[in-house]
Image (cartoon, rainbow, N blue to C red; front, side, top):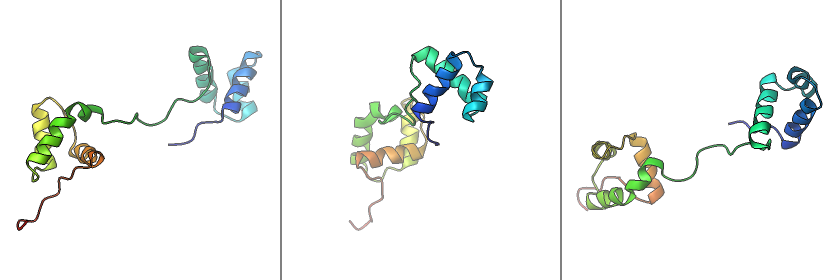
Length: 120
């Protein structure tokens, strides 16, 4: 993801437009796209601020956090359970997730779904 434009530039663009200049004049003057100017004006009117929104997703487990205890018990009870089996069982609980999502979730919990050698 790219970095947001500096707040100083955002504020100067908004001030330039509020002085009576058009959005296209502001875009030419500051060498930005007209769409950027439009977005800054919409942001300024709606929030009263031109600060960029936080990028990325919020931390946490999303769909799987509500099922954390069940997943932990399931993996602890049967260490040979596969990600695909967990996917199917979660689908039975009305939770549709990809197997990679479950794998990342298990890593965050510090659990492993790796198979144990037969002799141990």
